[in-house]
Length: 490
Image (cartoon, rainbow, N blue to C red; front, top):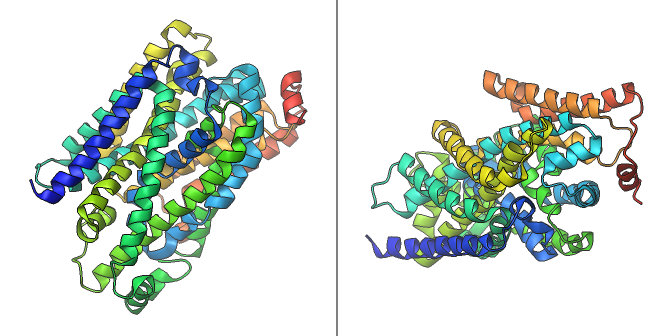
């Protein structure tokens, strides 16, 4: 084993031991289902902010993002620049009513909070279905990102993709099944700090990796592929704008982020969380752009051979342009980014399976919730493991697909419905069904929309239209007095 590999592996092993240690510590603070699913609603603003940042800046950003830049030019810039506005929408439209409803009714999951808002168990059931569908896609993204990183981290080990994916899935299962949301919340603090350090180091390495810095990179790309560095990249205007729509408004429907809002001690903690999420997210976005641009310029200039796969952009950058110590920290950061998002999704997916689906059918068992959640976590990992190994396209596009599933299903029901008294349960149910039919129908059928318009954007527009029109066509709902008080801002 080379010295470089030894240093990189040591960094990752230390990180993994810290995560497992946090999981063991978290077990002592996990006594019941409220602790397992909602971290006991004890998170302060710093933990909440770092948790939202860490779960959003996932392997999708660290590995998939640079791959999209490498393959399609600046098209995915329209995903990156949504950050501040997207977080503003989330905190303004979702944070207050969602946290108040969750606290007032002691909701232990997002689907339960939705069911309480609309006073309809069927709405909670359909929300849980959307959550599970999106969770499987996002978990597959994280497993694939971690597996690719581990292959580059240990080039002399002779691991296959299947073996690498099995290893990272095992580590993920080990600490998530031990501590639940408590483990996820506090490992996210470690992971968020690690990712910020890694992002800073990578930005510096990227700026010095090419003669002339970033301006030299752009000049090189303009001479070879002028279209790829234009405003729309190689994806086209309508495709880019559909991504912008999906990622700006869609942020309000991402359960890995908004569920953290339900875990805060009090609403005032969000004053700390919001600016922390925005600033950290901007740094993460710069990493996405810098690594992808650097790798494309190095290949175009002939300094590096073309990559076998765009998803190799970030690992190859670390292997060729970063010092062994920085590469080790960043590889740990990639695993941290993927792990932090995966653990959050495992928790909300497990809650949907063992809490929300049985609740909608009137079969809740508090005694079996925690043990059932651990078995559900294992099952979700197994299915996501299969999805990861079967995915043949860009890793970044799997992340886009999962984001679109959540956006189309949850944005109208939560971002609009938690602020509009006129919204009805019937409208929410129809919007959730429409989002699944349109989203999954377009993606699974293999149809290609004109001008590369993203299916998630179409599904989002359809579900919002269905939600508003059905609400207006239905009789005004009779709201629970406590829900009406929250919606009125009292």
